Image (cartoon, rainbow, N blue to C red):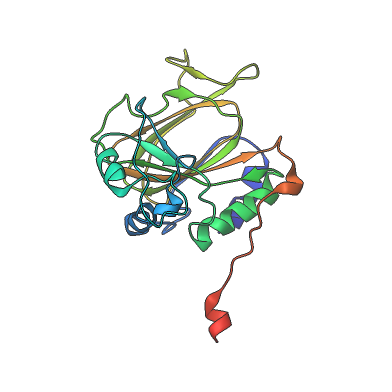
Length: 223
């Protein structure tokens, strides 16, 4: 999936590519995923607001810490959010994680960002830096992505303004991507309703404990 990016990624410098990973995921797949209640655990679902959600236990639920569909339905038009632990949502995403594990010598995951709210500068993290390298792929909609040639060596956090122009300032459309090495300041602003997948690669984790990337191919089993 991303073999053509290997040398660029290994340089650990910011870069942008157009139409580099098309057809990675879709709104239809996202719909199927969020309706699979066992996947929607309170640890996996992250909503960018300060509200606390509670619900009653339901019959037959093996994991009661999963969001009821009616709450997700209410969240989607009002708040941006993201889902963690998504590296196995399909074989393409799983393959990218497997390659990133090798290219960065780090433990990678997939975080799915969704924004079905009308354009709003306040939705999102603002200008921030991360402890992980991030390969960010636009799946649906458009996102303005800004990356500054400034590395935060002391602490990770958010700031309102940086007194320089970004070295990358682009609009990501489906299939486009940006690579942001760890501690580089960056900002993502949704320009439309948006679905994107960020692949964080954290190099300070025990590489011997990376997730298994083997993909079970049922078509081969049934012949």
